[in-house]
Length: 269
Image (cartoon, rainbow, N blue to C red; front, side):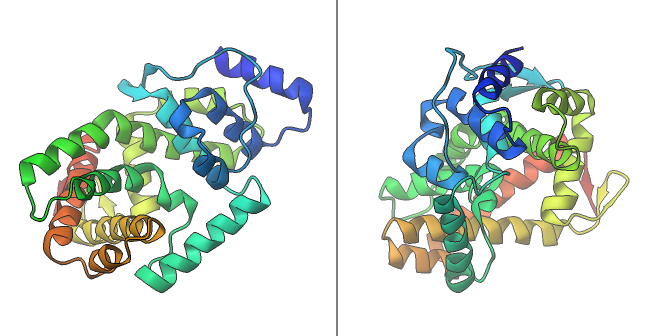
């Protein structure tokens, strides 16, 4: 398996390779966009590839199509702090989010699932639109927060949970474990652990509270991205959550909620 070949090569150079380092080094084999200077700052040092292997491919996991490069990036984001710079960066995001958006958001919240549904809002704003066009925004959501992307994020959350519980397990072994689980189970775990869902069988008891949580997290993500991009007024408007930005946040929230309900085979009380 390619993952095992990659780890064998890197362990020859570093026999004491830690789990977070092992997860982060996989980014080097994912996709160019995931190894930029920003991501290196976020995730910690990303080593140069030692082998000519690409993990930029599609595969099936838990009987669903998955973007492997996207999954690897989402997995590595669950193990931030690989350098002094990335520790400082993560602390800075925490401070900014608390002061500016009244919501704690570090690296793990700035990426993966919430980042995927926040990105289409950034793209929509970049088109210099002044009003809300629901069909146009839905197209962006389908393209930039696709089912395949969201599945990759949620499977990465499950794999990360296994690895944190059993840090000596091979990453390929954790992937195989999650692959054998019903995907419904992995979605339920994400809902309960990341969003505070209360489930009773196949019924969500606090769906309204979950949607509020998704909206707050997305609001924080977008506000911070705009603030870091120098768009202070738009960042402030995002925090207020009104007008066109409020409609965009509602649309992104509903997109993720529909995905979770559908793939979790859930109904709302």
